Length: 423
Image (cartoon, rainbow, N blue to C red):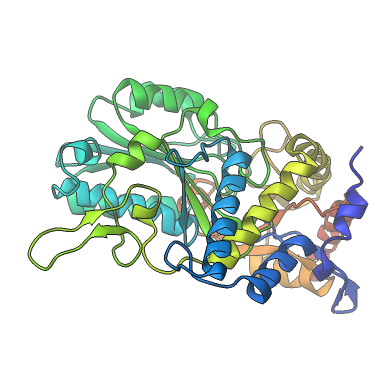
């Protein structure tokens, strides 16, 4: 039996009051808080072995490189990816946004003829199709929308069900023989709905398309195995999986990473460079990791990955499901409407809601006055809000440190919102 009250005690930031109330943090979909072991790992790195990786001959550089690569392997193990030398499938990125933009840029470079024969599978031209969905975070939508503009490809999208789920059942219609890229979210950061990606992946591969998964909201909340899911690429951020900010990861099937041309250029990613002919680039993942790496953050992210695995993702999922069921009771509060599925099945504890007659910013400030941190706005996902006839919403999202009592407090405070604003 996992003692979640003990786990909560590993988060020192929660031991404070906000506006005279004990802090209740329900904004983990934006960024999760960090356990002491993660904070200590980053600090210890700077105190003991701080040095550049893959380039120095001195002892600190060697130790730093070992720590960096061991962390990469820990992250790979969390998501079911290869971590053996020469078979690595994890690329370090500045975050999920950086990883997705890197892919879109690399596909654009392939479309210009860069990368040779092997990269032609990523090239796009007028008449080709890129498929996304209305549920996408802007970090998925915009890079691939821009890729379509640059290459002349057509952008298409999956529609949503009434409760905001991606219409996976229409995969055979939306994805055609002209489709070259499919990029969709695993879990919406607005509705919390888990996408049934299996039929989308199957159809994408039937027509020879590349499938890209936004795994930002799934890696911190679900047991993930990218090999079993058969996705081609996946991106996510460390700061949502209880790790540091400023770093993320891109998973790619090894054979695809080997064929993909680089998107960023500079030190540490080139084998040979000349003045009068193109450079020869390193094998992946180094090919995609130009410049100085965020080594301390990667090391700390590796600690976060191990910490999550030690708790057990099945245990984490069960705990959060209980919290989610309590949070969803906010849909029963008069004047409140949950934006997304109102049952806990096939969703996580990301619960967005609209309050009749009260602006989301006012709702958020009312919650903040009670010491409860929630998110307000469009959550960088405007199309899904338009699907529900909204411009913005208020969002409460769970983490491993939340309790049933905290979820009940959210619902109780919700009951006071409309009376306070005299609606």
